[in-house]
Amino acid sequence: MAILSWGTVKSLLIFFGPVLIPKAISFYRSLKNAPKIHGLKIQPCPSAVFRSILLLLTLSIIFLVRTLPIFSPENVFAVTQSRLQIPSDVLFNRLSSIRPNGSLNEFDIALRNKFVNMESRLLYLQLGPRVLAECPFCSADEPNSYMYYALPDILWPHLFNWAVVALVTSRLVTGRVGAQWRGYATIAGILIAALDVYLVVTYNYATNRRMTRLQDLDFFYWKARFGRAVALAGLDTLLGLVMYLSSTNRAFVNPPSPAERIEGVTRVLGGVKGKINALGVVKNTASRDEELRARSTAYWNHEVRLMRDVMEEREVIEGMSNALENRIDIETITRDADLYAANMLQPLQQHGPLLRPPQEEKDKGV
Image 1 (cartoon, rainbow, N blue to C red):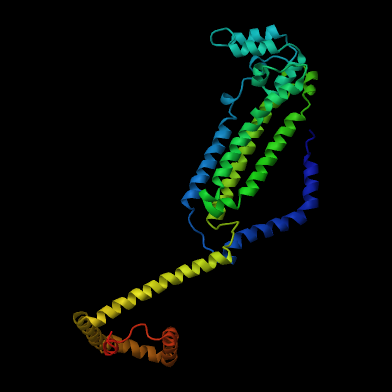
Image 2 (spheres, rainbow, N blue to C red):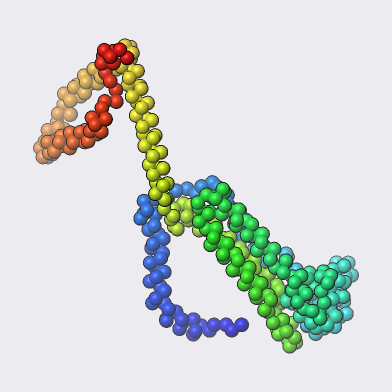
């Protein structure tokens, strides 16, 4: 595989930079300002989405932990520091010397029986030790048979990850927040799996045939295993990030549909109407009950006397004088107050009084 030089990278940046950088800045600003444009406020992450994000991050950590050497399959050439062309007896004698009991286990014996020629060793570096040692119908004369046996091992991490992604993006679990990313996550998972299988199938394992030193060998199976885990962990982490940003209205805002807006407004108006009706019932009850009506009248009489006493205090009079001296337009304030009161009472005047006076109801025989 050809590696891009730093000069080539700089040339590409110089050529595409003036076009891509402004577009990237514009895209970032559109994401940043989207909540303000749609009138949405940043909100806490919903509990269902938060649990789904924790599941995705946990799965990402598991994938990354599996890349550690302690959890990776053993490479007999690396642990014994042996060349690819070493005789099988010498190779497994070295391997037995590093075993705790000084003898080969059953898996080592099965692997030794499959090391019959150079072709089997090349397949070992391409597909790993388990496929070579455990396949009951495979033969080094038919390399594709090992490939068929290895496909389930290659695909099971992708299938498991697809199941988790389908769960966390289900509308029943995370609602609209997860459902809007389901298609993108599924397509990304399919592309990663297809690329993984393509790289394994098209790998030219014969390139290791000419390598005479251990350092020159391409341990493709272990590299592919590492890349597979990192790609799936990156996909889950990215999905968790975009779900967090969209659920908190920080980015990738999906504005509510007109039907949802109408439903929200109707729900708010219903709550206001309920409160107004409750207030009308309370006022009507207070007006009908003599004791409550007397207490209400006494309260307002006391309020009027209290405010009159306050307005006659010296500090208040001096404050009002200072306000007049500072040319506060009292007439404008009064006119604004009258206009505000008129606007508030206009809907009530159009639809009639909410409460009928008690005497009027009594006259009508209510």
